[in-house]
Image (cartoon, rainbow, N blue to C red):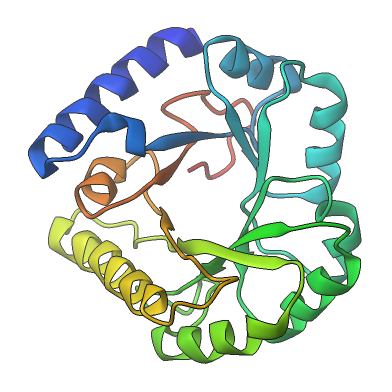
Length: 230
């Protein structure tokens, strides 16, 4: 299907989730995850009205940036190795995978201006997932207090792939509650107003629990390679 048709259907579902939770749909930004599609398909998403694109790998991010027109915001949403920071840090609007102090140090070292970051949290406690333990987040944010360039815009998580909706909801709720704790620090470089959570299979639950950014791949732009998509 055309991206514009997929987007229309997704927006309807976003509106319904917002109505159920007493929120405004303007509070939710869709990040089109373009990892498994061509630059042409990413362009179709931008032409349909998507303003934010998400990539998992540095090389593919830079390649598509050279091709896609319309000046979208680029989000790096994959696990970020320290040696890849130089290629990414000054070429994206947000990094969604800050999960350790050593990575923060490298971002700070390479940044030429403010870098908006999401601290990635493993709220499901699955060994296969990246992210910090919940109890590690506040100490990390406090460590970042003296950093000149890093801004902790919010927190990010991935729920388990399961049909147990309450388990999914509990992961999102835990992130929201942790976000509220970070806000209470009133740390100037950690406003932590945003929540990056929810993918194609669970974004409605994420919205009901407070998501402000949802990362949508397969149900929006499709999957041209057969890889595991968001």
